[in-house]
Length: 290
Image 1 (cartoon, rainbow, N blue to C red):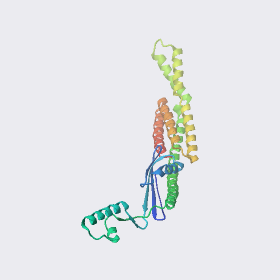
Image 2 (cartoon, one colour; image 1 turned 90 degrees about the vertical axis):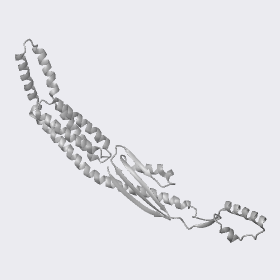
Image 3 (cartoon, rainbow, N blue to C red; image 1 turned 90 degrees about the horizontal axis):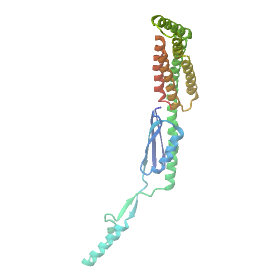
Image 4 (spheres, rainbow, N blue to C red; image 1 turned 180 degrees about the vertical axis):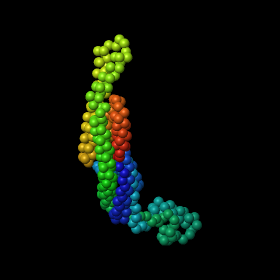
């Protein structure tokens, strides 16, 4: 299911922000975008996602704005040594006055301004805060997904109710009754016996019995009722059921196809087609369920 979440905070001289975007997906696919230097923590971040989510394509980005501490002057020793060697060579060759320390330090590259070194304790606090912020963002994302799931559950329950209604109509349809099948087969046998010479009546009755058995749709209707009960139980459970609902939609469709193939009346055929259309809507929505 889709969703968006954001969390942010500040530790010492660093501001951090998490942004999460989730869309439907058959499995859990997390794409992380981390700032330089935080790659070693990627595995821990992924474990946090896996504890909350089981399906969905998630894009997660972490941005960090670290404000450097006060710059401090440092001497580039290699540059200083090179400058001193050069000055000594010039003085020896030209007998000039030695340069002052201030003059030497003013030479480019000798004195550098650099940020204060990273405080390891502050970095550990930053990582801890970022992990807590990810938990907060995931909780918010889950809350949004639950709201969407409640609406989706109502919609899928409507589809299940429609499947149950159509199945009940198929069960009550006169053309599906044993008496109707028997009467239709008896009439066909009578017509064949009248119009055909030399037909073995015993063989004819045997074939009719086989056809009558194949035309009986009670077993398919019973299985559809059982699948309806299973779907309602799953939707009421509230646990991750997306894959189970996908499988159940295949079972629904299999029974509807058999119902259409066995139909001996136009009314049953029409009901079967309506069933297939509703089941297809149910299947499409099951792809959005975690």
